[in-house]
Amino acid sequence: MSEKITALDLPQAELSDATKVYFAKCEEKLGLVPNVLQAYAFDEKKLRAFTDTYNDLMLGDSGLSKLEREMIAVVVSSINHCYYCLTAHGAAVRQLSGDPAFGEMMVMNFRAADLTEKQRAMLEFAVKLTEQPAKMVDGDREALRKVGFTDRDIWDIASTAAFFNMSNRVAAAVDMRPNAEYHAMAR
Image 1 (cartoon, rainbow, N blue to C red):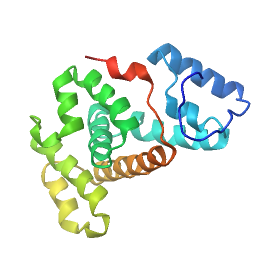
Image 2 (spheres, rainbow, N blue to C red):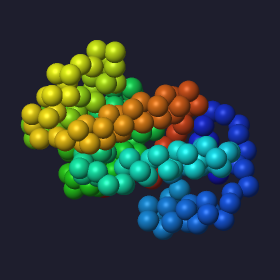
Image 3 (spheres, rainbow, N blue to C red):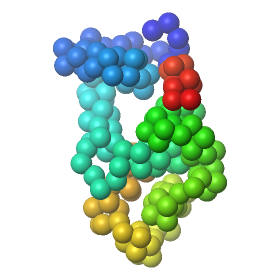
Image 4 (tube, helix red, strand yellow):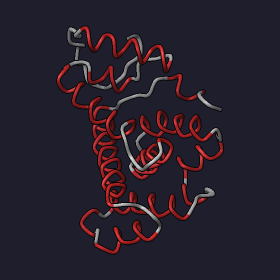
């Protein structure tokens, strides 16, 4: 690790064979080990908790597409000005959508993008949950139902938004830096 990943000086723990395999799979599929994983590698238990939650939310079974989940990650991270997540998940939106301009709109102002009514409702819900969680009411959930989301989908939208609010705050607190490779991906 030649580049500084966080502002903290936490040495990497001795990684288990399972984690070494996971990191090798990241290297194979992505061409890199995301810095967020390397940042958590000081404590294998914390790393596993993070990756298990991330993988379940972003890659597990859901009525939401992978792109929609990445869109939530980007919109939440945009509100929170999370440099790490905007860079990493902005690249994912560009890749999954096949549209670099769409990815940039998600990062800068999702309301400027050509979204479906369903996507717009999903992202507005994520915004409200991020900015005003104490003001969430039945009407917010009902608005999602009206555009076709199931209660399970609503759970997934909320869980994804909540996870990225948490990870944005950790990234900000430790000044987590994205892998340089993300900047050039899917452009």
